[in-house]
Image (tube, rainbow, N blue to C red; front, side, top):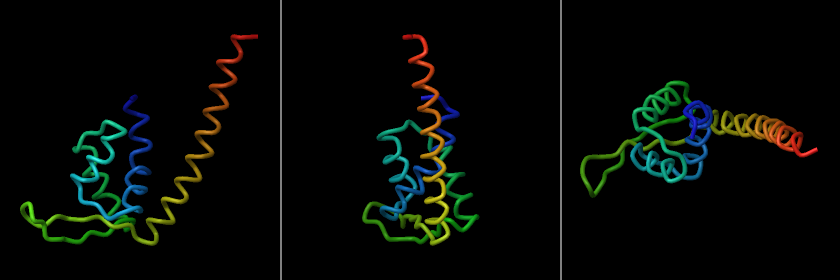
Length: 109
């Protein structure tokens, strides 16, 4: 997938996944990578920025498999921001789909 496409939607994907369930960084990377290939080096700066902007909070939780894990949780302002991004994404993707339809159908006339 095009790198610019991924950069544009990664923030939204992260917010949606965390809105469903608090997650720690590696778990989040795995869940995203199941559908979109993403480097962990891209994810952690994004998580830090979203936390700094108070869209996410963090907490530590003990792990049976090593040191405590830092979990990310969506704040109320994060939920509002996510919902706004979803609205924007739907409008944007609908417009792009219209361009695709018009462009691919144009050659068939």
